[in-house]
Image 1: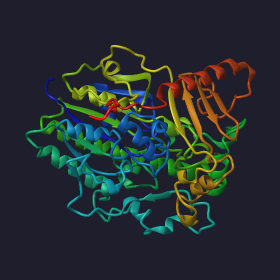
Image 2: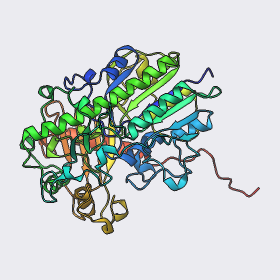
Image 3: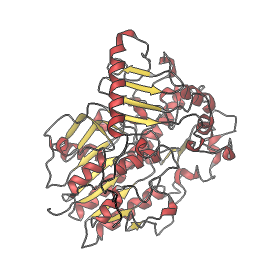
Image 4: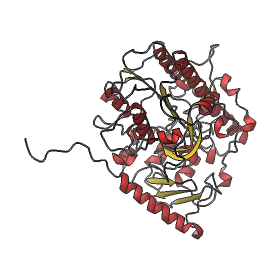
Length: 495
């Protein structure tokens, strides 16, 4: 095996796959990502996560397992010590693994030592994220409890106090990673894992980034007036509890502009990291992966944030950009191939020269990145929700039913024993999306004619054969991935 490359896993939280300049979105300010794709990397237009909320998605892309393989489909069922995690695999293979940022992957009681050499703690204590929106400060942005802004997650401008930026944990972790790049260990290849928080709501950003977004170029929002046919009941339930149906388009534009500005901020931070690699002379020897765990409604369907069991493209399609080390072939471009986040683990392992010692379901993207093929998967999958009675799958227990919590509306949907928090699975091809749902009607969309998924055609006789084919494809998916048999056999006789 040749020299192992350095590895950067740059993992923003809740970034929609369509907010990228090189994808043709004229409102997106992402010059650093755009330049990398133009010169060195491949960006996948059709990359999809395997669960639309944080922890299940992270458990999936860090293991190469779908959420159903070991029950990783809630915020409170993280990776266990006996389960495979990419960071541990790299550490065991001799990488110096530095982790700066969010967890949502392993139980804190497990400890970080098996997974990384350093779980970074900034020397200078950062300010509260989002202007204190989650920490109980700055609550005036929410308005009265009965107002239409109380659950909007919309904060607006961050007060920098005269500084160039609002020094929160994202800035602190980016600066920590840059310091490591400037002073790396000399005897090991680096793996830098940066699971930063932006552009996760609350929607809050410095004026510097807000002013860079041209509101007139924002794509048209998917309005509830465009919806027809049977849509999942959780969407209507959330709209009722959020109480944002009275919002004017101007207010939605302010929220969306702030989200786009949050993405622009992350692009700038990413650019600082890439420049540090170049200054240190390590850019060519580094494999860079930029990807999000899932997307965000950002006003589409009259909603904000995310939920657990619907699979609109704004939630499930994510940025996924791969720059291989210079020793590996690359054909920079935007690829239309269908790919999944479970493919991350397989791709990292191939570039690092590692052979997995367990069964996973990711497929390396190396041949796509090299331009040797333009096809990868015939379909992609996403899954979420719970069965009736699975109250242990709720994000919040009945004891935490505090309506002042930002996530109270989502918690109410989860606590329902009606159809709202049904278990559901998506299969998506280039042309169609089918969702199997327990307790309420399935969904079927012709994405060529309805990219906004506004009209559920599950009962359309003209698409009956498509529905049946996708149901069969989903059965095949579950048959192929229903378990992962350990590679080490148990002895049948005592020695």
